[in-house]
Amino acid sequence: MQELVEFLVGKLVDDKGAVKVEINGDVINITVSKEDMGKLIGKQGRTAKALRTVIKAAGAKEGKNYTVEMTEI
Image 1 (cartoon, one colour):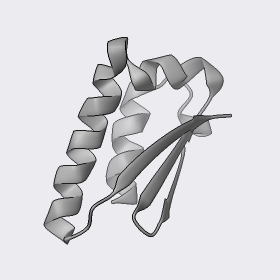
Image 2 (spheres, rainbow, N blue to C red; image 1 turned 120 degrees about the horizontal axis):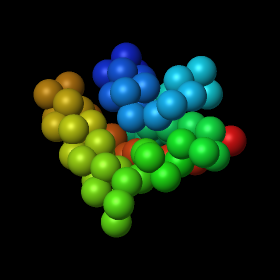
Image 3 (cartoon, rainbow, N blue to C red; image 1 turned 60 degrees about the horizontal axis):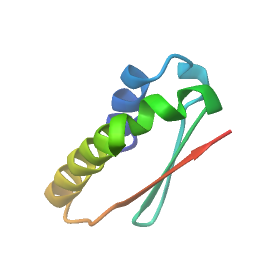
Image 4 (tube, rainbow, N blue to C red; image 1 turned 60 degrees about the vertical axis):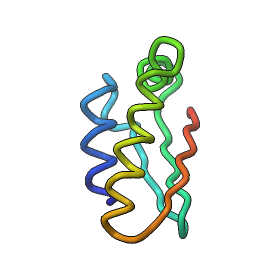
């Protein structure tokens, strides 16, 4: 799951080195640079919603219900 999230977020942001993905139980923490936070959220939160949808679908295949939290450095 971590590789999937890192791949998806890496394609969305400019500073790929600042991307950190941590999984604590059922919580996925995504950290990006301050400049890339807008790209991760998208207009009216559409990109963030789509990312959460993909993660929920992938988690359902594993039998888990993930919660996604996004923060900036």
